[in-house]
Amino acid sequence: MYTIKEVAQKMDISEHTLRFWAKSGLFPFVKRNENNIRQFSEHDLEWVKIVKCLRSVGTDNKSIKRYIDLCIIGDSTISERYEIIHATKLKALQQIAELQQQLGLLDYKEKFYQNLIKNNLQDSWNPMNKMVPDEKAV
Image (cartoon, rainbow, N blue to C red):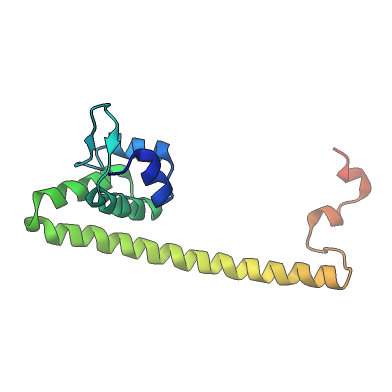
């Protein structure tokens, strides 16, 4: 059994976030000990993994709760759960494509600045370098 602190360290999630998720009903089987401290089992860690995954792609807590409720209902909800996971995967792929575009721009800018440094050049793209001295005064 694991405490919130141990789960936070193990799963790289803040304790505050875990408590919020627990209060939101995203960990339906977490028990509390005699001191009312949450105790996560290995089974509970699987719930934490899927919640963390879904949240990392931007799925809201209400939708995650729906997914968890469907899991609890059982196999009659497999196709609906598939649709949720499939839609989340498509969203993740879209985010990856956007990040790849951003990475391309960052690569370009990195090479641009490396060239400026290497050749001791002024940044002609920086609008501040195009202003006359009176305009720079704030």
